[in-house]
Image (cartoon, rainbow, N blue to C red):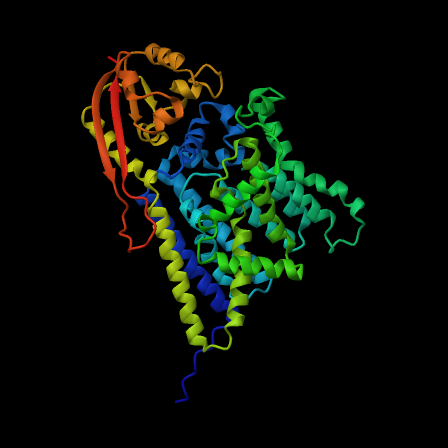
Length: 500
């Protein structure tokens, strides 16, 4: 009998793909767990986007709403009919696609250890936070990375068509679209003079044209986008002094731990410096700088109602991950004098520490736990049910659980007719009084008073019977080691009131 044939060695490319599949599986499972254990969101906007998608079937204008983001609403409209958890799982899929496309870019650019771009993407704290959420930033990131991959492969027209969809996902799409036009006009791979490339840049407007046509077909208003523009999105800046801009940039510096994370900021900074010094991959660095400068200016001067949230950087999270990978590889090469097993062990320790810090970050956001209390209060009402003809609510998860049409509520009428709740206490009280019998109020002690200036006592004093008043103290799932940042338990006051 002949000698047994030895197993063929695994090729480096195949091994890399196997690791990539493994990382992807880990984070897909993580996304499913996030959707289960954190049933709502750290942002009220997530619930609002879900309600927009669910209600669009009854209010067709929502499909082309400026605030609702047309592409998000269209993609999530069917999953929204199947429930909030299903819609959140669609984001899990979107994030997985984004990670895979980032990995393919790393492979095609010839980066070492390309599979590491997947954990470097997901372990950006705010990206992980929204990787199983119904926010628009992950969708934008997916469009960006697909378009970027096409552009880097030389498929310029296809890249522009995909990039044109960015404006249908978030307002930043306009500004990154302008940047994309600059990339195309000055692309060294194109032998034509830059002025002869100008007509082809028109493909970047295809998404906006599709939006305008869709709005015209649905609303018959050629100026719908202008008329539907959110009133708080002012484009008029405050006094253009330098100090607010410096303050805004400093705040982003302080928030870097939520954008890149404490440990991953080092490879990001190293990769950014290396790419700038070598004048390589300007698409990655300029995309990041555009968002950094854009929202720095917006926050400084009150433009577009920008609050300077770290989550805005999710829009360019794939570019950040690729820059991190460049820096990671630079650092590994600097440590080449150490034994390879030791370097591998150090890398594993760093990633494990980053993963732990990211989980603590997500679990440590107190208001993300409100949904657990809302769910308990909702369960109580199911056991003591009354006929509900209208639901008034202070947190979107309340409306989501009851499965109501959000536009039956006075404050949401304001979105279309401008007859809803405003910052006028007397008028809001009048709206409370005008609600029909059978109106159920699901209110809380923080969001409702903060956003609408109305407390549970306002309802009680104007014809509503208090059914239940409960206080919940909600802690995170994980205990933190001494010295780890922790914001403490969340105390939630919830009220159910009913108009007989």
